[in-house]
Image 1 (spheres, rainbow, N blue to C red):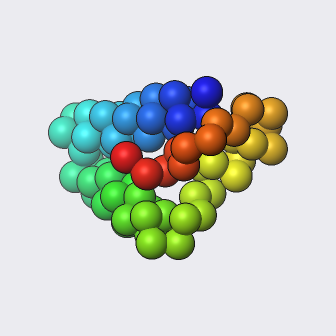
Image 2 (image 1 turned 45 degrees about the vertical axis):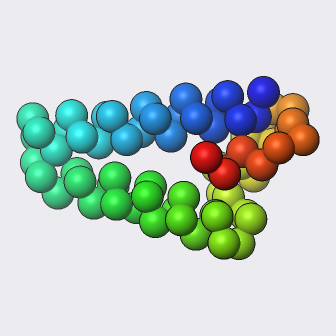
Amino acid sequence: MLNTYFRVIVGTMVLLSVVLAVYVNMNWMWFTVFIGVNLIQSAFTKWCLLESILVKLGVKKSNDQSCSL
């Protein structure tokens, strides 16, 4: 379940930042870069801030890693 929440939240944030970059200001693309850097960082460290937040909110952790796509 954690994996599903993770993918929905990250996908929504990426799409939202692209829409904001197109219609509001190109500086919103930095938010997309931030998300990408965090995904790469989590691949090496096996730690993801969003995963930690979701677990503290009570989302059940599955056996697989949520940040590894």
